[in-house]
Length: 84
Image 1 (cartoon, rainbow, N blue to C red):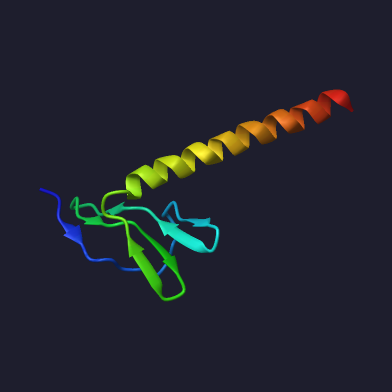
Image 2 (cartoon, rainbow, N blue to C red; image 1 turned 90 degrees about the vertical axis):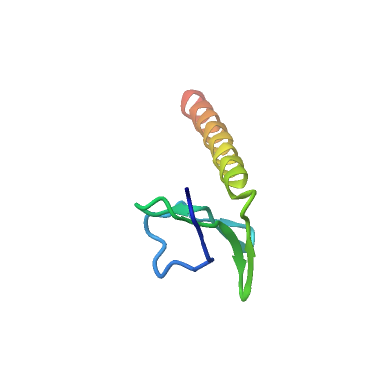
């Protein structure tokens, strides 16, 4: 059974798919080798909002938006290459 651990801001963010969402920092769920989960959250200044039920959904949404942006950029850059 997975245990949910309390929120803790990582001392370093390397290795986490952390991203900025406007002025907020999004840190998705993190799982250690024992299967314990640190709940994802949004942080801004001293505000911290735990996302125990929606971190995974928000993570998937952010990945989808980034893929759309990458595809759009590729199309735009590809058009300039062929036109020039």
